[in-house]
Length: 418
Ligand code: AMP
Ligand code: GLY
Image (cartoon, rainbow, N blue to C red):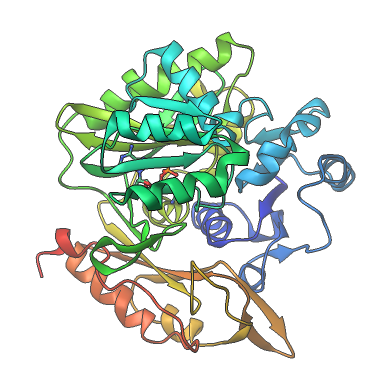
């Protein structure tokens, strides 16, 4: 089956690697725009503007793609899935309307309220007076969220009232959501959805803060691991029954059937599981570890979801091995951006047992790689336990050469008993 993958980050690289590992021919896959790392595995086409729904549809039609997988949120929220679907092409990725589940936190709250899905209490605010009264209502720690896409930088959790207000002021033009603070472990759980049915993948944990011990600013994600041995039995079934299915039903009821990846961002509180956010696409860097353990053909799973026939899809199976991903980021990430710098050591890193490198931001100039973004790559290690997977992941990270780069040293440390 000819497959077009839109996007050009480590998530898309992980999707491509998983497609190929589970049986798809690499020559059937094109990634647009892709990046210099992905181009090592499959054809990339940087000429296609993935944010242009008309251009993407023409491209997919003319080149005979049978399945389009939309990786990032931006083209989904732009509505790229809709004309593709109208043209009769199977698309893994929700419509413009359904993607509002990620695009608008207020919309997501409305859907959750209507579906009876457990989430934090929140106030929607459009003025600073409303923000002040909302944060004083909930008290510290304060959780202030921009109600729109802010590249992972729209949320602040702080006990400093002035900092909370400053953040609200900066994003007031997008609308602000002030939420009650939820205390507990975070879990990312992905569901494939075909508009009516869902199939769970396997839970993972993301490390959102920039530095060790969960210090520093929020980022897009600095590492991840799966499975989560500390989760209670029945966790996945409970999330499916109380969160994923009611949400998918509600979206269908309001005429916005969700076809694609429902990302449930959860906190396990003492009072039970709560949703902190939904995303409308695979998470990054959780995808790197979740798909690393997938044994079932990914093409079949995504295609059945896209075609509205998830009931005919095989139950996703995962290896008993564990996976750990460590993100290597450019100097200054996430606060400032570094100039493009030479990047090397990827093949040495991949020579370490069980290791794959998913590239997020790299270009090639005169045969050399240059890092050209904040999160540059994920080193993903598969191992029989977390001790081994971590050892191999960090051994591989040591091979990556990029001036000024940084990474967290504590990914999956607490489950590794070392
Ligand atoms: P979000 O973009 O909504 O996922 O928020 C980014 C990060 O902020 C989450 O991964 C959490 O670590 C944190 N966060 C968001 N909402 C809350 C909340 N209500 N209570 C505690 N932490 C939160
Ligand atoms: N890892 C967080 C996200 O993909 O939004």
